[in-house]
Length: 172
Length: 144
Image (cartoon, rainbow over all chains, first blue to last red; front, side, top):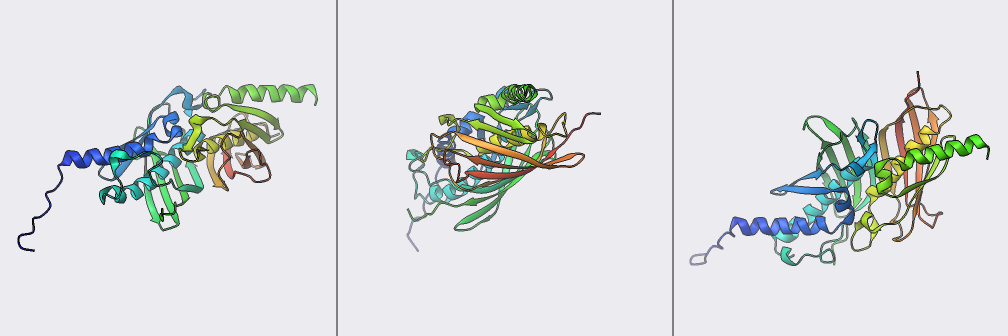
């Protein structure tokens, strides 16, 4: 390979911008994520979801506590975005997809939930909540994802969930 | 329907519809009696989970099933004074048809001293082909 020039690494800002644009395109296309007020922080390929507290998320006004359905939706959303992000990551990094022109129509189809189980460990307090998902298995057709959610203390989960998902077919 | 039943339904409806998140999702309680509850949720663009197909997000269906399960527990003859979800499993059979109202029906089929067991089904206008089913365990708080 003498004489062949090694490709200059891209500037960090360019890489970051491309990854953030892809994540943004993925998340902003889903109205329900916006309705609940969920956004995603990215460190490399690791995502952390934040559910920004709003009074309309309350399920028990007396306690008060976040609605169990909101907690379920938060966990399920985190799992779906994690799975989609993992698919998207390869497409973006390899240059098969151009992050600059991503629209919901151009994005890979979202995985479909087959089943989802939520384990409510303590009541959700009326403040922000965080969640991270771990893909335990992702095959060509099916995926199994675990999610945990916490509020003030990372060690004190208020809910955890496991779900199975049908992966979109990738032959166009 | 006797006066007492009407009253109970009205009270329960007010209770459910006063929950901020149930309000935000546009839920309406249509039936509540002896451990059975039915709640509807109209289609709304803001609940869409897939921008391409316009199908409602599974999470909104979960919220509907959870609320309906809790209502079923509260209406059980054991007359609990409170309930909270311990665990809820949802099976998604098919995508709900965009534009159609979703109806959830939950039944509290067994209670112990402190736990209530619930089954629920969610349907759109094609009631013979459920959109999702759920099973859950709820706490049952009894009065002193």
